[in-house]
Image (cartoon, helix red, strand yellow):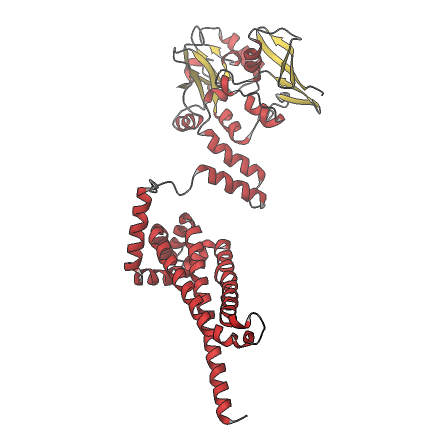
Length: 446
């Protein structure tokens, strides 16, 4: 081969090599913009602020870019569009003429060799652009969005400043069109409660959060919406002391019930005047003082039944006693609630703690049968058995299984009465006066 042909071949190979480098750089540049887009858009601002406070480089720049997503997306889209056009045009011009001679001698398609070679080159470049310039960077950006955002943010800040005039025009037109369509974005919280619940579920599934921890954390959110009526001890079950009764009678009540604190009233339960701590009374007597309830009685918390459990918890913080009574709009006492009741709302039933003789409210008898206390809340019944007795049409009219039975029957039932409902059978096992005590819940056999 002559020296001239070798020189021509060398320059041809060098030209082809340079073209390959340029195309490769363009594809990687497209990948950088895709990586920046998914990293910066997917990154959580709360996590970025934490990283900025820890002094991680690029976190502050990432926060600034994330706060102006319209300008950021305009810059990224401009970059991706220009690179895509340049990659296709340059690749077609650089490689199509090199590939055309190989098709010119083939029958039928030889006359279209230039077009065929151009289509093949564009398809090959598009394939590598999709894989290397789109899919791989996006997967990387989604896998570690915050770290990706901090890495690309400094360079993206520079690119954004350079493209500011064009970005300003595109952002302005975008905002105008969005306003015409009525799609202006309103400020919304960065994290909503539903997202937190989803994160808790994902953390539990991944084994990062224990199932018990998830339940407690979700109960905290429910506490802010729970009514204290759902948690209280109803009026018929309140054990209280009448300050006008002889001390012997009150002492007998304390010995028989074994509680640590008692509401104290004068005359009738609607006139509650304080709380007695048995420990304080014992210390008072041990010091040689006479056994007088009024001498050690504490102020009681009195709250309306409309407040939430979370608001009651705030009131207990400044109270002298962790016991309160709940009144209705007429000033009558409808129930009693303690810090222990609020704790049960968070961690579950604690009725058997220090009270081993107490039985659970729901006892499973067979696969299709449960013996249930009438005072069991319908939410607790649903949680333990999967049976939902709530009815949207009658929402708020009853809160317990006994209330559900009364709502369905329309009268005070008698022992042995059976109430069928939605493939279930509710049999009244026992009554305590006019109060429904025990219900046998059974699934009907098909």
